[in-house]
Image 1 (tube, rainbow, N blue to C red):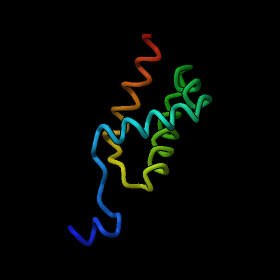
Image 2: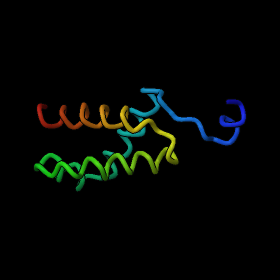
Image 3: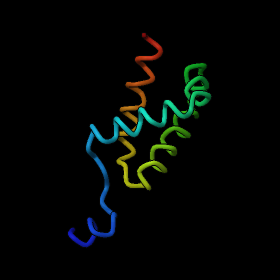
Image 4: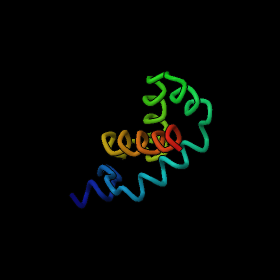
Length: 78
């Protein structure tokens, strides 16, 4: 485990950290957000990919998906 941490190979599941990464990605990708809100459900995959890129592939995809849907749901309902 120590070697994995030293090499940056551990998965990030810290919700606070991932929430900040998701917020950053949403702010930089207005078109993908609009596509998703317009009904293009595949845009979520692009956004997940952008968060994975931001975290160098270390983010927990299930948590990213949940945070993205929560954030995008707020935009839809709010």
